[in-house]
Image (cartoon, rainbow, N blue to C red):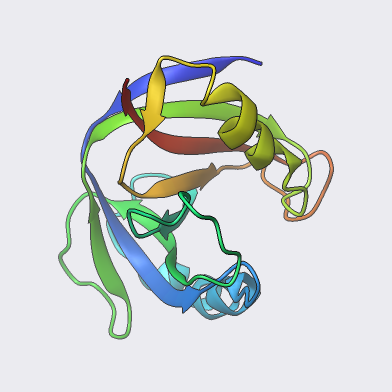
Length: 158
């Protein structure tokens, strides 16, 4: 398993967000409402999409799949000028991330179990209280076993 440790610089993002839980997953609803609007967003940096999750600081301490978090569907922009109505801005602060190149279905959660149960406890890092996100590039194909994406996990030194 190859992992890259990256010191991410701040990013400006524009998109939509919803509260959800793993039990009450509204990801399809979120992306279904965002994708028709994506071309209205000016100053996009690339064709990549960002799937970003904001968890409270204790979310993974006593994990409860019914506990809510905030999920965003986003694109990166150069600036926040001319943001379309009903879309929101989000500034992703910089920081240290473990980046995993994942190939497989987005419906398979075993990779996340590996990250949190095997890789993280055996690394020199702890989970940090910052957003988690995935970069969905040209090779991303939702629920396809040949899909590729980057998984970014916020970390800090032990």
